[in-house]
Image (cartoon, rainbow, N blue to C red; front, side):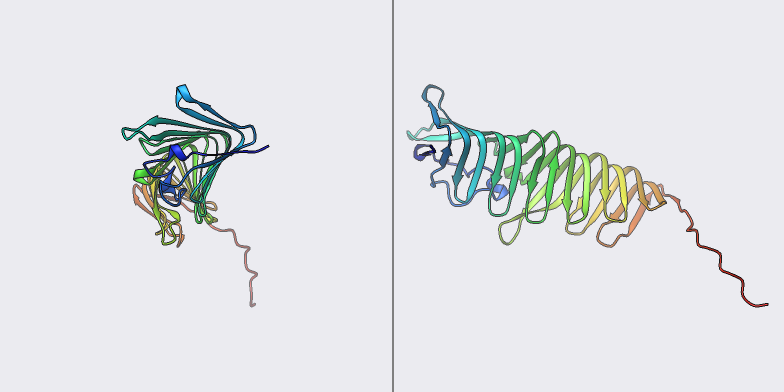
Length: 264
């Protein structure tokens, strides 16, 4: 049997969870509807609601799925209540019209407007971009900033930026979908296209322009040819790379078969 409970008393005064991610539609006066196969528990003394078993919370075109959903709330001065923390655990999936988030656990701090996701196979997908991470994936709503930690990857089409930590600035498009604008990469930076691999200690990738600036121990490899230096600019759209400081090159000549002699 599926239980349905509407949190009429727990309407958020602030924007809905991860509004900056495009994961909330409508306004804050909309109720949150929660479905749970194993029921919903109200811990009145702790000011907590817990929904268990294939739990699903929906509001304004946004749905949060998880094995368990927990809402922590507190009293307001006007006699009402407000949620200050939302948690989802087990097979977490947050879905809206334009974005999807996958995680094992997600916690939203409404006071700080920060969503933190942990677990395996962390992934944020928009219409154009994909961000993945091994250790954690954060979204800072007020700054529209996503931070991916541990083997972090930002992918658009066949262009890929990987690093120990990626800090990705997102912007809202015409249809309110989010897309990457700038990615700052730190530690073991690896930028790839179909033909080229560029590595460095840190870098900045301007997504729309398709340009990546790498700094520190830069190595650009295309086939058997390699460019080395301290600062480089790689244009992922045109395939043109430039060493700006400390340039060194290793060019391997192609081996063409000898042409047969002609004439007498």
